[in-house]
Length: 361
Image 1: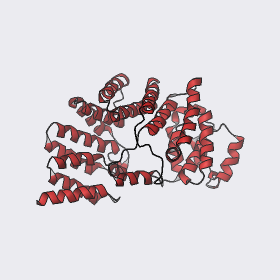
Image 2 (image 1 turned 90 degrees about the vertical axis):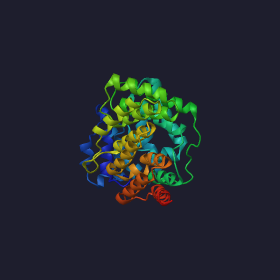
Image 3 (image 1 turned 90 degrees about the horizontal axis):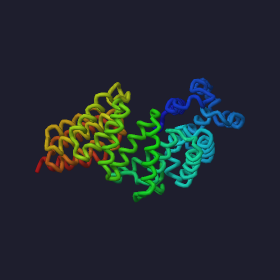
Image 4 (image 1 turned 45 degrees about the horizontal axis):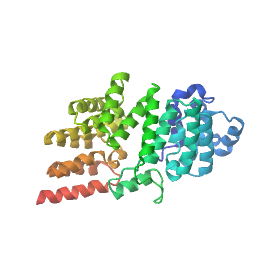
């Protein structure tokens, strides 16, 4: 994903910002129609000096500098202007994932600009969601289950070992993130309402507030009929599982599995992998080892790209089945994953070795 061609990146970014089309002065088609030469800084920088309000071209510039990793000063310059003049542009967040991790002070500067729009009443649902993400990123340490997963995280975001990642939970900033997510949800503006609901539910579960998360799930899906959003359904299934509401959890997770499609080889996307993992955990917690094993093996059959396995979603289920003595199914799962995916899988390899040893004892 990090190596996707820049023109595709820009097209995706502008499509994601479709809720703001009325603010744009240059369309996606206009940008894609430019020659490769015109997409270089020596051409688009002079243009932006004369057309400062061109949101579409400026977000394309943010994409360009984020992709090239060449000029952080220019990335910050264009991002700050984008945040100042177009606070509902999602590239303020998406174009700065690495930069916000590397430079917390810069992230604070951008958040302050967006908060000025909140105070002025010019913020929209996207603005609130982005602020929620920024506060959550500052509040909650990334979750690593091993040194290998930490290394994959740093590599994925092109971060150095000394990146100042948070190491303890900042409750005040986590609460502020939750408040902004709720503001985005209250706007009833898609897709940000759905994305904010998913973010809020996941954050509450992480804060050990599963009961509150479950309430959000039931209210959000009943009130806004968000039953066609697989990521939200998976987040809700996880929350209900945490509260022991297994029937509701299974209903959400089965629905997510049935509608998920991310385009990988015309097959299931990442939500399916996570849904199967959660369904397996439900079965395991209900004492149905056969069904839990079935879900684990099914997860290996639908994973279509490396981030599904490197995120380690099914490994939690695999480890719990291992602890329950289901060594054979764990070994088979590891064999399937290692046979089908080329990215290095050190955690899966280590689990396979443990399962092999347990089987021969």
